[in-house]
Length: 449
Image (cartoon, rainbow, N blue to C red; front, side, top):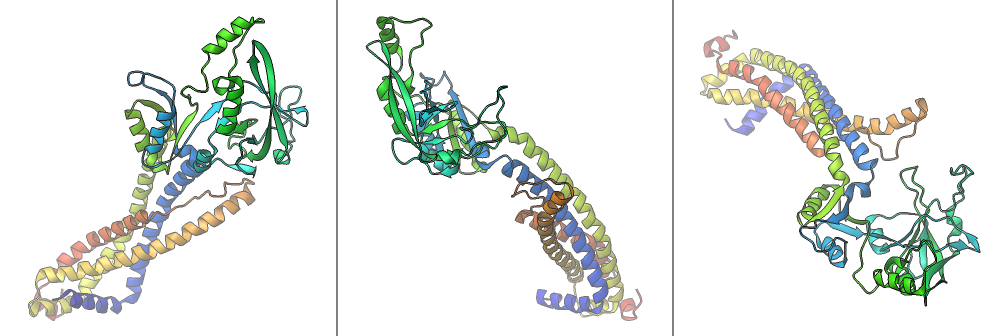
């Protein structure tokens, strides 16, 4: 008996009792939908809490904080190290932030500006890594800078930020004057450096973080170093007024701009979160001490994995309950088709063929239920993601992040549901199928079972 003949035989038999078949498929579909939707909650919460809330760049960052002294002669991160990081596969960008070692008395229109740090950086690399702006653009010229989001924030008498934050975007296009301090013939002097504000950094994700920094490119940092004659514009510190000889001696001891540059706050940004672990391990093997948020997320991901396994287990119980209906349907089918089975045996059908026919029918019931249940679960997932945030906002007056998802159904979850349903259906049909092979031909032809 060919497979096509078996399939036609099953289809004809399934049409005999459409109501019972419909109810059995419906029960299976409900079990599969319950399994998929329940497990999708675990996937949705993991994606929202780990990937969306934490932030994409933060997840893909690998912070380099030193070298293994047993493998390197120098401890600072230098040009050769930056080139090595950039050459690694799956690296999106390598960023650094060098802090200028003097205050520089920034001012706009003669009014002093409260600044925390003066930071030199590679804007092209920062752009690739996702450095965001709330206004303006990134610098393109040598004397263009970006200012921090809170640079105009005013502090009250107790040192707390005022409730009103003037918009930093109003300073875009203005000129900020920086006073570069340097020693000339042992005497402290200052040289004004005119810069143009072209952009404002985006607001920090952590609300307690106040960004009052000035961000400048490598070209401007080179100008400052040319004036001071030292790396990062560093000047010698004196507790009392020094002599010219003391000034000259200490300046000679400071790193010169012509020497090998030392990079600070070096970060390797991976193309996506899945590549972070491999890149971090490779860098660590080469002797670079590093840290990434992926190291801390291992336990979080493990927790979500355990939760998803538990949800899938609970959902599988619903599918197992639906298997009772499949077992009952197939048992009734064997009883009702006893004469057909007798005829098949009489014309020489092998018991294995009869068994396959009934297993094929039970597997089709499981497959139809799985497909319908999966489609329904996608519809429920869409409705939950669209409706639940609105309900929370209306009833609880809480606003969720824009991309927050309660339910996510990855393709392999849908495939797993179908496999579980198909397996349960085959198990449910085993006993009725074996019973069909044991039916006596003569009794079957007399319609006695």
